[in-house]
Amino acid sequence: MGLLDSVLGAVLNNGQQQAQPQGGLGGGLGGIIGMLASNPQLIQVVTGMLSNNGEHGGLGGLAAKFGQAGMGDVLNSWIGGGQNQPISGDQLGNVLGSDALAGIAAQLGLEPGEAAGQLAQVLPGLVDHLTPQGQAPQGGLGDSGDLFGMLGGLLQK
Figure 1: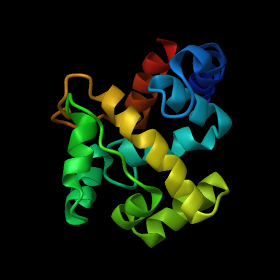
Figure 2 (figure 1 turned 60 degrees about the vertical axis):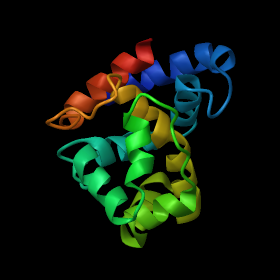
Figure 3 (figure 1 turned 90 degrees about the vertical axis):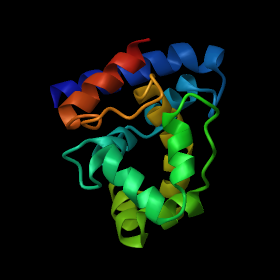
């Protein structure tokens, strides 16, 4: 748990320092940090969604789910260099499916709608920051250890 503790420590410390200058929720990286700081379990859920060894198949698996739900352009906007298209909690719930969303909600200790809403606020900016060249890495974002390292690097900025 040492790596998780260090990432969460960075979230909590930088969240307090950067939340004001970056703006509130939705204020870019500052909003993401604030959201993660208010519910640290969210970082584990997001890592599980985006890491290659996670239950959702990493960024590639998530892209496939978005494509199947007819929302591939939304995820592509988060990866690409342009404006991030928003997603609602209901839309994200449709992408993930009710079983997966129920599991995520249980991990977060929230109702499925609340969990989907939090993820919908965090995922666009986080995917955008994890793909700074506007392209998904060929091999995905890596396993959970790699992703924790990337998140820790982002949160130190």
